[in-house]
Image 1 (cartoon, rainbow, N blue to C red):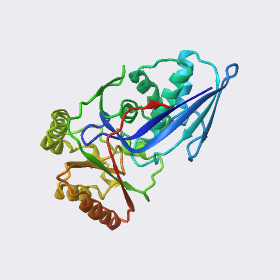
Image 2: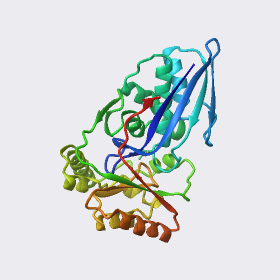
Image 3: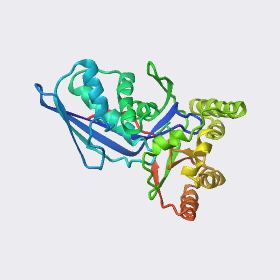
Image 4: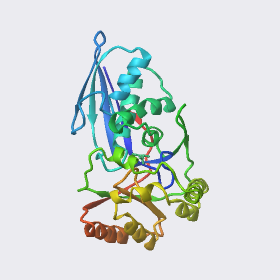
Amino acid sequence: ECSRAKAYSSSANLGSGFDILSMAHTAFFDIVEVCIEDRDRESIMIESNSNIPLDINKNSATYPLVRLMEERGIKASLRVKVIKGIPEGLGLGSSGASAAAAVSAFSELFNLNLSREELVKYAMYGEIASSGSPHPDNVAASVFGGIVSVVSVNPVRVVEIPLNYTFDILLFMPLNIKIEEKTKKAREMVPKMINLSDYVSNARSISSLLLGFVTGDRELIRIGLNDEIVEKARLPLFPYYPKIKEIAIKYDAIGACVSGAGPSLLVLADRMTDENKIVEEGTKTCNEFNVKCKVIRAEVAGGVKVE
Ligand code: HSE
């Protein structure tokens, strides 16, 4: 007896929304299949097409299931198959999507009828397993789809942001940058204390961005896609970012930001944007930094689906 679910990649933060905002996109997806092998024994076996950790407490798909089974008193021997489509370590919510798909498939298999917020709550354990920190933004986007705002973590509350502006997504993915434990390191770079003026500037950005999405005001989205705190502190991880953002603005993109903890970048484009020029000059800029960038076009994606 098996159940499988599909969850999309995502870009967390969207500039100033560190650990709050995230957007699911169609760039990539993961599929997780959970099967009951035996109801009288208790174990989890994991297999994958990719090089993910096989320790069930370190794997973002299986650790949420370990916790769910413990909390709900469910005993079974499971076989979990993780079909990875989302590249890891690029800031595209790879671990979050595997966790979202695993928890959804499990909920379906055991008829738990978990709400989407409950799915986020358990999937968040996957982020603890993979990076040591329970940030809920990527899992929330992969579970809900669209653009989400995490308004509370304990208890988990996620709000879907009504999106009234249509845009294309360009993802700049640096393929030859691999940093071990990137998310953990990137989180250590974020300052514990900030200036009031930086706080005000970021609060302006996030309110402008949200209002821009909701009212469909391009100018507000443009002003909103900025950050003075987290992206700045992490700049050594993606030194090509300021120049690529400049190019994006020069060719009338709505805006650009870092995707999650990087090193990928997100550019929002519309009818006014010269996408080809951004891809061409942006890729050249990557090369100047000895970085090999691949650019992918995507759209805003829906939420996790049991197949
Ligand atoms: N909000 C998280 C961070 C996302 O920026 O660290 C990590 O994928």
